[in-house]
Image 1 (cartoon, rainbow, N blue to C red):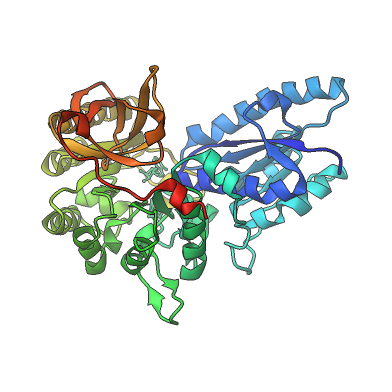
Image 2: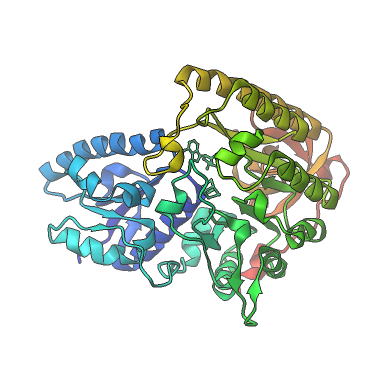
Length: 466
Ligand code: 5AD
Ligand code: SF4
């Protein structure tokens, strides 16, 4: 192999893909691939795709169209550009991508990333491999530890995969088909990665998985650990000040998880807990395995344990058979809970899922109206939540320089972006900030020591270098 080759990875969809993209870059680094942010100079382009809704999948084909032009241009200069399609579209469509897009050199599903170097060799030989098997071996095997420099370049907040796949089979969802059965990563592997992240300056870890609170990993003591137990252990790692997790399922919120929300200060008081609908009839048709009341009771248990908790959720409007009354039930649930934000989507029939064949598909214009109404309500709740933060003092983890000179930006415990006039030396640390104002998206604040409060002492980055 000659000099360093340039790798450009584009991620679509969920945090799992963002994480997998980083790990693919880490895995290809020893083979001489250096990451670039400029697609025009790339020798290898990996599209890490999402299949969750139709629009997400279609985006991939438009991107491939653009890459075809780039590849032709490079070929004129005698340079070969390899195009790989990874992620859930790769898994779901496999060889169909090769047929539809002759410019693609290889297709690799999320279960087979460990085979990427071998598949690239095949592509170099002019073959067009398609790998979408679900191998029997450990599917977390492809995760290679990134170098300290690679972690630093990625910032102070990191994702860490602890679980993959889903056994829930909601009738609208492709995940159980593209990501396979639910598997938990062993505790020791997770701890090793977390310690490495902490040593390179990471302060916040978000544990990720499609069904993250179904976690049941093999512990070093021979027992099976819950997510709560894992968090208790992760919180002991010096330097790890903040823990989060996503995405969780209301069915898997057990008492131990509720208890760590009460007892672990490292566990941030913001939880993404998708409900999808507020109508029991629709929840049943969705095979969500919980009722509206079950969901409200989970929220109540969590709030009782940790009154500071704020919730976000996912909603689907226009699931087959959804009536105005069902939709009104969803709006009522939103009003009852009071969210600090949410993602909402029009139902998108996914080939191979049960809901795609259901009668009573909801017309597009009805979905558009419902989505608009739901989003207005969520926006109002989010604005009210942000406004309620004004005058309060919140801990902010500073991540980067801000929009204006002299400003730095970070995240509140509630994941709100916060902009503060403060020295760049505070990046990578947590400081108390008095919130003065809200914009449409960000909060603006002043370092609390400037208004008379103490900046809490936090682990010193330099002390962790050793
Ligand atoms: N149509 C619309 N939204 C969907 N989601 C999952 N599948 C579909 C679909 N077929 C949404 C759900 C899920 C989020 C990640 O994407 O709300 O929680
Ligand atoms: Fe999809 Fe339901 Fe599993 Fe979430 S819980 S990944 S929506 S099947």
